[in-house]
Image (cartoon, rainbow, N blue to C red; front, side):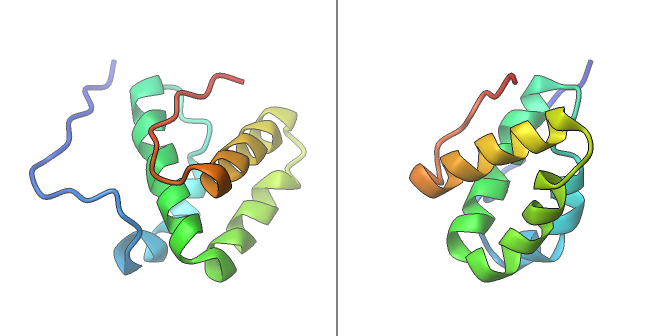
Length: 93
């Protein structure tokens, strides 16, 4: 089991560091550990909110995935990112 802790100084806010790693974050959208997903979805939502033009392209790739579960979670994260970008989400498709 993973132990997810928030190191001092870690910012979930959307900045260029998260944008740089965004494709890798999106690729882990179905991480098996719920506590990792909580952090991951918050970061993804923040990046989409601040950098929609750049962030939506990797999301489109996941939305078009042949794996329906990936596509479903991507749509949920995207929908919630647009509505409430800085709320922690617990998504269980």
